Image (cartoon, rainbow, N blue to C red; front, side):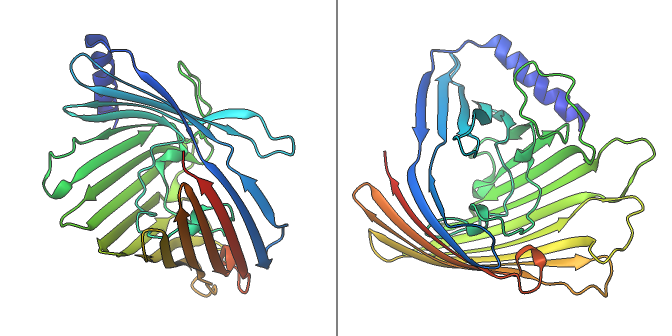
Length: 350
């Protein structure tokens, strides 16, 4: 992996030194969106009002040899009573060449296929505001990372392969020229792979796999290395879209981890989503997500976490109204910790 890292860095540096760029264009994007949500059941918390407050800044340009570059960074305030500090996050710099795409990313450029099954009218519901505790595969976007993607059209069946590498488990967002980054006490380097394919019209298949080293601590090894993978398939025909996904997660277990009653050895997730475009304005969907934990102690009773969501979205002019009604069973894998959530959303296109 060190050799691959050296090759990628050398290519990026040599390309930067051997080419010149034309003036790029800068754009600002955002989401004019407001939501109202309610929770009932075992959830603690008041009903919530929210207005989108994140802005994205993007710049792009072209080199004199036809290669293109893109830069993006988000301005995302903290969630405090006073509105929070304006923080930069989700930044990336990509260079697209005849030989593929090279990228350096901070809290961005996720490669996980876990959510690619989603055909919901509103959103992948376990990736919204409510923390239901569902465990998902590792995604390299959690760390500062660099990536390489094969060129589009190079491989048959629309196959694109991607590889990402994060040399440290530190999750802080480093500015340029950063050094002396503090080490994570639990996670070392992360390597992640993703493959995308479109073998027939209407079908998209994605798969991903991530493996993590344990932190470098003298005298400490791993009982179980962190590994996780996902595969998703989504097929669209006419007004119907069906998505199916599986994910497997083996969390890191340090050497000497005892077979305690609460120690999870692995998770298996099964996700199904069905969407229907009723007409030019109305879309509806249903989805079901199940996450099954397996404990080191076989006698421990395992409670599957299940999420069912019904969603609808209606567009008129430049406005979209969406409604999502979701039941969460066994939140956090705790028996009878059931929650019902309703989200009403209004968004404007601009």
